[in-house]
Image 1 (cartoon, rainbow, N blue to C red):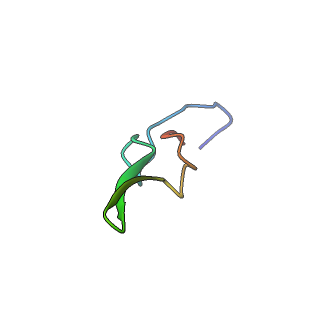
Image 2 (spheres, rainbow, N blue to C red; image 1 turned 90 degrees about the vertical axis):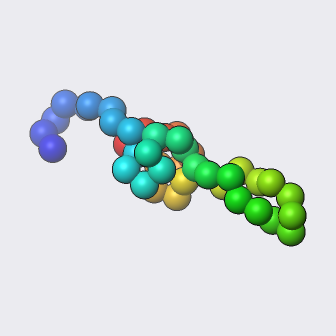
Length: 41
């Protein structure tokens, strides 16, 4: 780890920040829980 602040793509969402999900037939954006929707770690 160290002290440098290297920003990398989130491992859970592959840098996308979330995924499209289905909510009763409607397409809804679900932010990634691990990176809080930012797509970065």
